[in-house]
Image 1 (cartoon, rainbow, N blue to C red):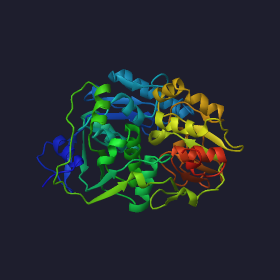
Image 2 (image 1 turned 45 degrees about the vertical axis):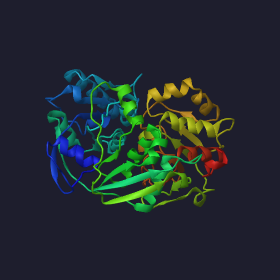
Image 3 (image 1 turned 120 degrees about the horizontal axis):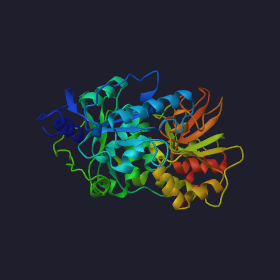
Image 4 (image 1 turned 180 degrees about the horizontal axis):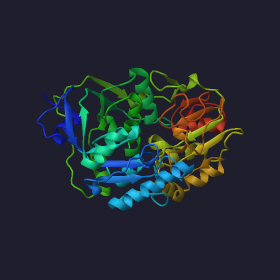
Length: 417
């Protein structure tokens, strides 16, 4: 019996000829990412030994620059850890800061066939590079740091066959919202993306799908390899790798088709993305207090460029705070060179440093009582971005930008033709 992409990687990394759903496997971990939350005083336990400093990456991203004394203390601890073990891949506040998952893409840190761990739940975004990546708990991340191994239960895989090409003003955020709305959660399952439609999707567009797969409660989210992805990785990382393809007779729990060309702008209504999305028309006219574009799911150069297309020559509506957070300083610089940042600020948007920021309700855009926000980030559950009474709608960057201009949730096709 053949294996899926995730199963083949788990088999290779556990040195077994075959694995299947239900198996427990101990696997070698190629890359471990530690971020500022790992070093928080209430979580940190001093690590006395590191197996392989070359396998480690340390990133400060959740509250950068530090939002309070506790965050600042975590940064101090993290810098001491980096110095102690000679960690070379360190992203401190400054030139190369950014959200860890975006930095993985910027620098080619995830190689096809690899196992990558971090204790942030959106680590699965790295699966766009044909690897398996997962968020794990603090004890597991410490163990992997010390031993370069971890264990998984092998889950069933659901495959999504993408076909067609996205219409104007529609993005892979809308594709995800359709999947989440129609098919619900994928708890204990892996998600595999492939099909002829991926040739029409950029790496950033694909990464939105793998990152948002965390909201499906998926274990791993992977893309089948193609030349676009392989060239992206080779341009950023000289290490050798072997791409992983699913076997022709791989067994899937389900194979579902997504026709990109038939999609329209969708919105997830407050408190959940699971079975909770509708066409944007169903939410049109809802007044908003804040609009936000950013996060590891939608903080790319392409996302900011799309927002700029909507905002060009227009102004953010009175009474609306439009906050835009690039996914990394690399993205910020590229957008600045292209004139995108100027377009955003001239329209009245506030552009913040590269950080997780408002997505997790930590800083730079926390919501107050009874406020309404439309966001192009990762989550919209109650209390996610601030006060539990706030209402959080989720849409694509284009939908968010259109809503910021109108002051109410709006269809981006009005601005993009």
